[in-house]
Length: 362
Ligand SMILES: [Zn+2]
Ligand SMILES: [Zn+2]
Image (cartoon, rainbow, N blue to C red; front, side):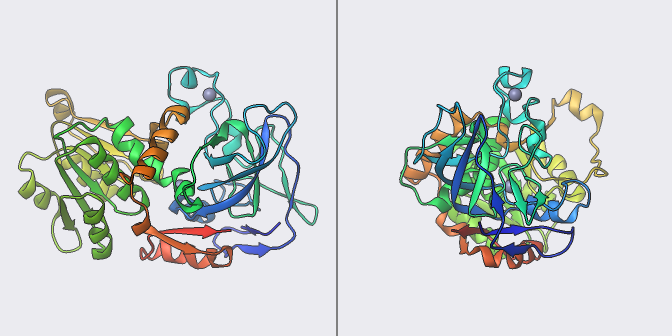
């Protein structure tokens, strides 16, 4: 199959025509990919040496059609349309039991370069190629059955691909992690694919004030189109002062989708009494924001992390697909359709901040 392989950190991926994909084993399915988004996390994984083993097949935001099932698989059948999830919850660990499958402790190896059984389904001229969760920069992928959620819809692949990461992460952060309620005030720092999904989630939840914060005027225009009531260009004004002009006591909910120390600190400092800061962006380990402990106690202020939108697949994926069908969730404005050959350019455009959501169509 054709696939983009990362052979060395901080080098372009090479697109090969002869990557071998093995048959699915017990508990797995082979999926022909319809579309794959290109996410900032793919770029991080290509740059942060040592975190993901190489050579590897990146991409983790995809959807496609089941074309083969492993022995004993009864949950899915050939021809099923599926959204691929980069966490494939085991269903039996403590976190899964407590309705927190995004934090599943049972199939961790799936994220660290191998299939769940610790081997790989990909190779190139005899050399092992590592998995990257659901590896989607390729014509086919092999995933655990728990990581392929069947959807009964005719929506285009590029929409369904984004449900696999950005949309579930952003909408879930607003609706699940933060539990935004009607009338709440919300600020979102970083208006990429995830931040814009937070804005849409906050709109669906009934937030009355939704403040979009970014340095890119084009992204702020998109934010307005998708539900922001106010925008702040933080390259020209102080974001906290600007938020307090709109919402004098601060906002009920601040979301940070960039993972940067300065903007995380801003998010914390722009919340109100009883407010919550929800961190979504992938931050480096040394990032340590601070908050006065007295405020935490006396004002019951909280900082929450949101991993994969605190998703519960069976509950959330049909709901999100439904919102896409009704038009409550809109993706057309953010999608930029590309091909697999454009994937290195897509990484460059994410690094420069000019890209919206680039989606590889197969
Ligand atoms: Zn992602
Ligand atoms: Zn689990």
